[in-house]
Amino acid sequence: MPSKHKVATKDELPDGSRVIAEISGQEIAVFHVDGNYHAVSNYCIHQGGPLCEGKLTGETYIDDNGWDWNYDDDEKHITCPWHGWLFDVTNGENIHNSKYKLPTYPVEVNDDDIYVVR
Amino acid sequence: MASVDNTAENNKVRTLDELDIIVDTDAHIRETVGDLLPYVDDRYGGAKWIIERTEHPERDIYSLTHSLPPSLHAERGGWSADTNTVDKKLNELDEFNIDYGIVDPGLNLVLPSVNNERIAVALTNAYNSWLLDNFLDEGNHRLKANLLVSHHKPEMSAEEIDRMADEKDIVGVAFPSTGVIPPVGHERYDPIYQAAEDNDLPVFFHGASTNTSHVFPLQRMYNQTYTEDHVIVHPFSQMWNLSSLIFQGVPERFPDLDFVFQESGVGWIPYLMWRMDDHYLEMNYELPLLGKMPSEYIHDQVYFTTQPLGHTEDNPKHLAMAIEMAGPENIMYSSDLPHSDFDPPSELFNRIRSHFDGETVKDIMGETANGLLNL
Image (cartoon, rainbow over all chains, first blue to last red; front, side, top):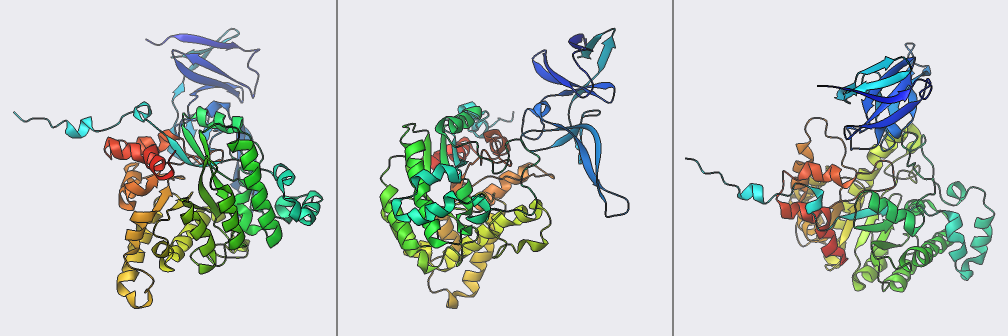
């Protein structure tokens, strides 16, 4: 039976920030990205690094014209500080191979409090 | 009723805790030119004068460059100075529960890129003196080290081996091996091999993805990314070096000398062994220097460190199969910490522990290194 675990208040988690909480023995990070809250496991499925301690970044890509090398600055990808694997925090997927997916958790907001449901 | 044979199961190891010893056979430190300058011998005062006044010695004494930066992705960084004390290095070992680290240079992996021979020798000696003062004399025997030699002046490297060999925690000779012309099998390096054999020290060959813009294996100009350099430079360097070593008869002439090839992973080993053996059997007329199959020399005298394991997208079991094909008795775990493509012990352990019996796993994770290096 899942229960709600409070991880922060809204004030404590402004846009672009994160909190790492321990919930029932597991480390889970909650990111505030683009006005939404996303909870993912703080354990890189590559080699076990502390994924959510890394940087939030955007993504580089080649434009449709085949030449321009752009940067999408929607910084919603968490970069593992060990080997640089990138995961989209909004869905837990490795941005290069969706086969590699982090566990994600529902987040609820009640009044000013943010909860992870687990 | 069918009986269940548990013998195989009982002979497995399941967790890292069951290992008596974990040895990192490629543990880097990050020495800076500033660290080494105070240790440059007086006889090289003129060289020191130049180096002191060089704003960017990594570029203008060494040739440390890349196609694109090496590690924007990872927070341990590529070449920045950080792990240059005993405490910092021990912290790294502790972070991953590694018992012993075999210390290899950082910046001096690109020693072959130093064009001035006197400076190359001066910096080599300075590194060894710095190592002695800052890592070995600290008295912590969890850190062992390879003494550094340069390919530039083999006789002077032999003297350096004789100078350092008796230090308690020196366990091998570090021979940076990318950009070494001629390659390491050439007879000009015999003084190094003789001194290493005389002092009972294995020779460690280690590549680097930088000092190769002018010689094989990379003419960098058309490698537009660090990846294009890095993917091939390590295995290509080591393939050329191993082939040169074997076919020029180095293990034949130095039968008591062991060799360790670092940082090129394991997947290439079976391929090269098969290929060398094939040639030996077909073209024996041009290979009188050899007395036995190349693979026999490898099994008898050559070891390989495991990092980087690479990413087996199709099936993780392939990694264990590759080790089986290479010859598990010659394979030793390495992390390559603090470099950004490091492998923690669990990365190797988890992919071999069900494929091999417990003793083989223990050997790969540390017992083989212990036996080879008398830790």
